[in-house]
Amino acid sequence: MAAAQRDLPKVLGLQDIVLFTVSAILLLDTLAASASIGPSSLFWWLFLGAFFLIPIGLITSELGAAYPEEGGIYVWIRRGLGRHWAARAVWAYWINTAIWLPSIFVLFAGVFARLFGLEISVSHQIAIGVALAWATAFLDILGLKIGKWVPNLGAFFKIVIFIVLIAAGWRYGQSHGFANPLSADAFRPEWKEGLKYVPAIVYGMLGFELVCAASGEIRRPARDVPLSVLISGCIVLALYFLATAGILAAIPASDIDIVEGLIDTLALFFADAPHGGAIVTALGVMALYTFFSNGATWAMGCNRATAEAAAEGELPSLFAIRHPRHGGPIGAAIMMGLVCTTVLILYGRIATSNSDLFWSLFSFSAALIMLPYIGLAVAFARLRFKDAAAARPFKIPGGAPVALLLAAMCFATLVFSIALFLYVPGEGPQRETIIGFVVVILIGEALIRVGMLESRLRRRR
Image 1 (spheres, one colour):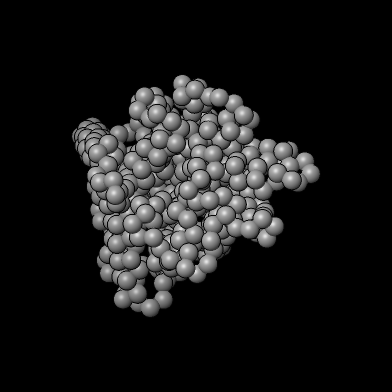
Image 2 (tube, rainbow, N blue to C red):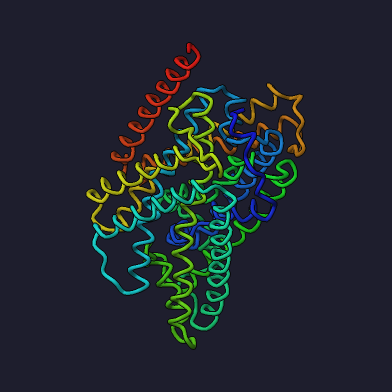
């Protein structure tokens, strides 16, 4: 256990954990991506909810209650697979967020332009993204006592927006007829076209474990982590499913744009409503805030896991620096800001539109984030045997066979999703994504070696 963990303030209660988790998992960009699949996306939400979301939620509940240590997923994989594999997992965890944040900030710029009828050049989008990246870093440095209010408010805004989409979509469908057929036949999956979007839905189910990276700051992790997973899981799956149907009620699947789909949908829903323009603007501003809170939430979790790995000598010591009073991960946050800035500049030269930029960044980072969860599933299965005597305040019923089955379901889903990010049906290998994927892994190996070297030098002193 790192020394810093013992001094961290206990600032997170059950409500904070639930809202933090909802903020992490409930993503408006994932909603638009799933709706663009068409009515069959409703099947995928239910199928993957049963095959992946429930298993990963149960696994997180057991591990979060049994091992309530600062670092979360890093600690669990370290216990199950060893420190070096844990370091590799947390590197993928951290660098995914550093690469994914720019895609969210580009989405922010695109929605901002659409909402206020502006033309924003790529260079201005990049400038907005850089400003948001450093605002995120600064917020993380302040610590969770202050920072937790950003995901809390973001989760509230997301729930409001999703409920509006559900209610307004039903109303629109009743008045104008549905833009897409919502019959039983339409729900059948379109394997050729729908498969390439399935990883985006799986991606939208990741994040139950994120708040556990701050377990040292949770008041009652043994009780609150399993309970928060149950509450947030029900909220997330219900809102994703119903809001996807709401969007499909108003806009043909072929016309849904990943960046502009939300504003188009809201404008259509409230076109005839009194003060409709003001309502759309208010909801749009809420959506903009949620994009920022998305990034802030993931940065808070990933930077803490990375700081814990660095404090144990598995990554360069720069990542381990924490604020002396607030406990915020200064080193990891500043490094994330630098990586975000670099990625925004580089990818701004590659993409020809904000949609292209969003998808290129999203695919690259989403393939990376699957790796730690593969490690999580394997570590969970191994800990059931390696550390069978450990106290488990929450334990998945059914014994080892059920535990292994759930781990295998998660493992298979994640491997399949990575494969679909790297090889898209109908398009072939995604060359840029594969190259970036390999390069980032190699950089991680180099940084792990640096951390190990620093650790050896400190011991010799």
